Length: 281
Image (cartoon, rainbow, N blue to C red; front, side, top):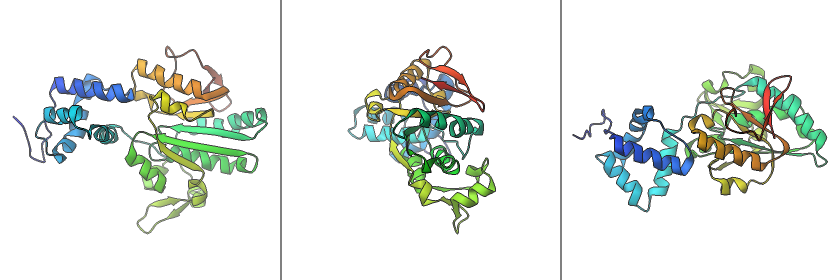
């Protein structure tokens, strides 16, 4: 029985769920366990109906054989990834970056140029936080910093480029920082200053795609926080290896506090800094 009422989701049969999950995994490294079936059903059902499919079987057939399937998978990534973030998240780690990591890298480099990648940047709060901290610490007067921020999700990248945020993005932002770097818009949202916005460049990139990641060249710091939770161990190893290959010797990898390289990689050492613990190549 197929439901077409707007109040009902299409039924996602187990076999179609597994095929769909495997296709997403093959393309991105993101793994959805059996317990995620309802999440996929709930998030993709409206999309299947929007394309006038009355069953997930027909939608999956379209994904397998239609020439538009690649761009449709882009839509799927946008729908199934969760983008929960805010400014100055995990502040101890950000302080370690600005107060300990940057001075160390600057002291080592003859060309005072630091390259930073915010991998899985969502709607831009993380890379903009990095730029604001560098500005606050006066680092832009002492060297040049290149911040590249990427995500797989096109919708959040558009939001990041606009740089307009609602109240919930500021749960860890002091009033002083908000007043200094944002302008209040008539609708109550806050727009980031052009000076900070212009310090970050955004692009769509799949961190699982070794060939595309290689195009980034060498990097000094990689932020990939609360992203690899979506990956199984095999995919995590591919992603961590991609980061390792891009980082200079002595470069830093900053993961989320709930993430660890234990049993995944011996390529990085855990370094105890004054503010936090981070991984170093």
